[in-house]
Image 1: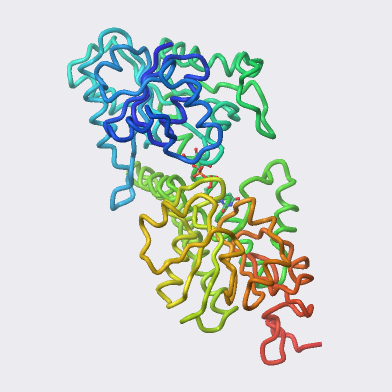
Image 2: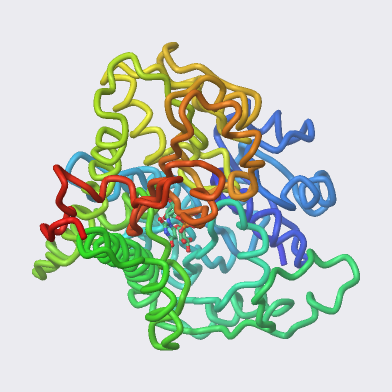
Length: 474
Ligand code: UGA
């Protein structure tokens, strides 16, 4: 099938490359000519596993790049709209890019088209897109609008697209459902997974994926509700971690205990310094705004956001209580990206903390395997960068772990302690076992677990001769 994908951001670029890999002819449209030139020249603008291979495989053949939306629409049966929907001041999604694309599509319709929302949009957007296309003169029978939400995560976007848990298509007509069904047939029929050149399956892949056909409104809600639920799961476990810290329980043990209940599940139950990125913060806010406008006061979502914000402040307090005063302290920082496996720093809790620590007068040296270049573009020059985790730790009063990169979970602890001025690690991602750290002579603070100290006394457990819980020292 001939498909146009409008917008070459995260979702558009990955969707375009993957749809080409399914055998479709894809035109990726963007109005940023520098980006298009870079893509044509073989560059991959985002750090994403398997994306360079797919772009290399299809560039110039199944995957073309263009700034001409009109022509791309005329040449295609389905038009995927994957433009940005940034938040406005009040938290609603700004849909002006979606609207202007809808207007342009209208004037280019020459035969039946399915216009597919791929960006995360509030409920009713498909109705608005339809109205805008009609208002601009298109024949009502010449098109349908469908919603096909994307559930890909940064860092694993290609495999999330090709090996999804499910494919949701929100179609209000049979003919649009048929077109979208055909587009995904190589996945839902399983043929893609038989191919020798298919992208390798990730762990836990269950193929072929089911296709869930809903109304367009339900599909729009599924996307917002999924992200809000996942954010809620993270805030929930972060709140439980705080309780664990107060009572001396271990949040990892609690996670294991509750996550093995199949009704709850173990994933997205990792406590830390709160969720970030370009999706959860924006989508929870947008869903809150959608609910308010529709007359439902979804206060649970306010609490999800409040806990997330509080989680960063708690971590800052932890740094303060580990180091006493902060001004002039030298801190090594591991991680700047909003999560491991990506160079994306949008709404990164790590970056928020680095900024707060710099403001408090700390000297910070940071290392991130992928996000340093992007950080340099937005951060003031006080932040220093290192070429390795050990260089970041060199001479530091403490080391902070702020992003869950796999390489940070496998550090040479002997080497680390020899680099640090004081062997103190404050881990916002729970990458280490506190006992192992103590055995290596490291005073270790993490989230939702008692701090551990090389001499065996839990760090911070004693306050003026009494345990923190108020009981006299035994
Ligand atoms: C998220 C969703 O997971 C995707 O399904 C969705 O398609 C995407 O948003 C989107 O709407 O485009 P993403 O933002 O790439 O994907 O990242 P996640 O892996 O979900 O992580 C989000 C944040 O939550 C990160 O800061 C991460 O560190 C944090 N997190 C995640 C935790 O603190 N604990 C966890 O257990 C999981």
